[in-house]
Amino acid sequence: YVERGYITPQQVYNLLSAEEGQPALYDSYYILVLDCRSTERYEDSHVVTARAAVTVIHPVLGCLVSCVELQKTFLMNCLIVFLGSAKARTDSPDLLHCFFQLSSLGMDPVILLGGFSAFHALYPFLCTPLMVLLEPERHTLTIYPSEILEEALYQGSASQASDYRIIKNLHITHVVNATANWPDAFPNRLRYLRLRLSDDAQQELVEALPLASRFISSALRAEPAGRVLVHCSAGRSRSSAVTLAFLMEHRRWSLLHALRWLKERRACSAPNMNFLRQLLTYEELLFGSKITSLNDIRR
Image (cartoon, rainbow, N blue to C red):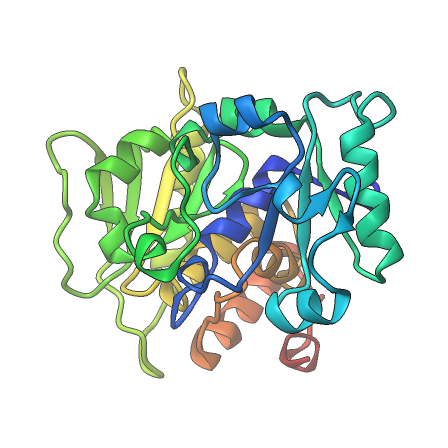
């Protein structure tokens, strides 16, 4: 549970990794990230696309951008305010100033739990001393797979699974390749499960789902624990079916619960109707009765 007004480093990571058609981060009006630390610390390193808060909220002049402009400009109306440490909210006048200035304008800012230091500890590869604000600069950014289970399970595209920088930065050890014909990119360095699935109305999952669930579970329970990337072509349908089956079987979650969890972390996930029907059957097999209805997951 995360208290209202706060956001976790993992949630920020997944916001920065979001894509729907194209990576959301490529749009310079996607999200406003404010860094309330000192100018020196900001210039030393900050989260990619973050702005120094003083450029938006001046300590004397107040908000330099009108509320109307903020709401028109930033599509998600989502503002993230950084703080130095998890306990800094009451000790940081700059943070409080930013937070209450934006709140008074009718915005709904959120504070990063643990501040920049917590984010940097988990995702140093998404921190930079460079200003990355305009679209041409944003198109040079690496977009990462979604983090479904913290420091454990990731879901993404075939191109992400073929980028060794991503594999290395996320410490991936195991990969579930759910594509029909995309080759395993690093067979000599990683352990692979090749499923060869097609994203269509005829594809059967009866053998693939338990096989993939066992593979993922074995990797995560290993000593030392592995990290698993599940991918298909776009990271939307086939990979989602595999991830959902694992969450149902090993977290003992209903399909509806698992689907909501996945959507919160990867909004573009969208298993096709054939896969959803088979996941409903899989749920009944796992729990001995139907828990989720088709109408539940169509909403």
